[in-house]
Amino acid sequence: MSRIFVIGATGGVGRRLCPLLVAGGHQVSGLHRDPGQAAALRAAGVAPVAGDLTEMTADAMAAAMAGHDVAVFSAGAAGSGPERTRTIDGDGPLKLIEAARRNGPRRIYLVSAFPEAGRGKEPKEGFELYMRTKKAADAALAASGLDWVILRPGTLLHEEGDGRVSLGAALPYGPAARGNVAQVLAALVGAPQIRREILELTDGDVPADQAVAAVGRSRAA
Image 1 (spheres, rainbow, N blue to C red):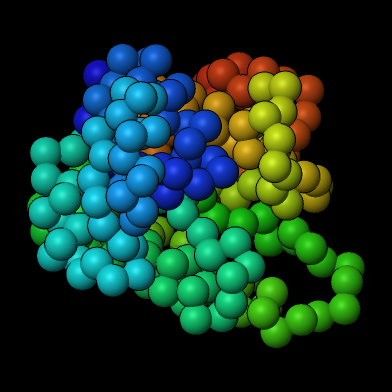
Image 2 (cartoon, rainbow, N blue to C red):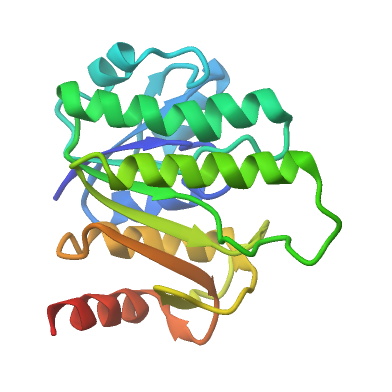
């Protein structure tokens, strides 16, 4: 059993992930900005931690995460503008890395972005900024010296999904239901031997737990 701190606990992936982690026997804390979200987190078996990611310092984040073994970062600006892209998708992971070094979990799971997501369309600066910001956060975590897994889903869908996925180091582009992303994250948390890996994820044909187990076997071979 791990003590897990989820940043983005009330988002599309996080609110699906938290109950899976609780069901797996983990103790889960979830960061939330709106006071009204605390009751829903408690109802899901999650300890609510009040805080605004855009305003928290690394010191404040370290204090909030003290005693946790694992952190999951699934927060995102969700197209709400370049400034929030920079502060949430960019600065958020950097603060998490610094907090983990000071007084926090040594294992981090970061939800990033599939490199080809949305390509084939007319370039837009907002999207290009998003992709640059995601890649910079990935690079910072990979160089951090911490244990980490970077999960890069395809274009996220507002769906539960059927629990069947494709998962690997490099995949053809495809969409990914948020529910499927959550299932893969939960399985990865339960497979700590998978570490310092960048994995791409789309909806597919293999049950999420089996897809994660296959990754673990291939790395052990």
